[in-house]
Length: 379
Image 1 (cartoon, rainbow, N blue to C red):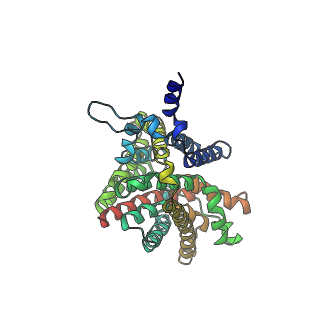
Image 2: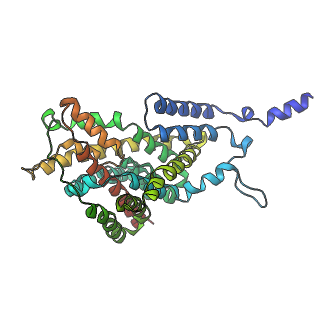
Image 3: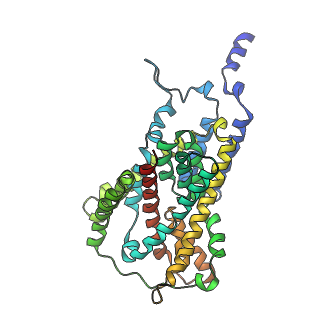
């Protein structure tokens, strides 16, 4: 009887538990706290935190990550994570984002495309820094995309360039997305004066339905021909938006933005969390990646604000509030909301949210194009 009990205990997770696993459980609980108590991206952080817990119950005891072998099926997470490692989940996420997003602010004020482009400075500058720190070009590119605060794009490029770093990069990207309301405001205030933050912008013109319908088609054609490697992300986003704007496939638009998006968020979040096993996550390299992600995000925010101020030197009659430059990162719509929040601290009657949505949408397109450029240039 005693031998049977000892044999049973030998096959439990407790027998193989390490301090690293316990630390990762604490990380998961911290993410849960931020999601539930602070309301920081709960639809992302809760599935991720639960995936972290699953991953750090010793796999040797659960076999949940086992790959298929002969006639034996693989573990549950092996199948769920195929969508992550094969790069399927990110484009489907973009489909839902497109179906949810109104591109009118960008169409009405196309010059803010430049702000979305300026924010990509964070990506390319961090690529250089990571390369100088010793990361090879493929790893440096994967890390740099964190600066766009775009989780799906970070996963998309990491699945091709650095699958072994995918978990750390995805956690960093989604964590910074969740912490946008904390990270961005100090940077925005540092690079602007109170007078600039109180600047009011002219009301945007009304955009016709024909313009809204033509925009996704033009973007697919132009971006697909210019950076073909970005087409999986760009095209899916624009397809979702065309569903929304054409007015005759409302069921497809609703399914893309609700049922499909929610389902993929669940699988993506759990899959990302499940890549963060202690022996992979708790390393010096992982800490460097998290640090570089923070640098990239800070650079992206600052460059957007600074470029908006430079634009105003050439726009004497139609200046932009520099705060909307910070919305050029891809955390949609959180960065636009933060721009609004910071502006209203100095002037509660100043409404720049719709203006900020323009560079926010441009930032999503910009980070996808940046990923496509890396995929095209780095072999």
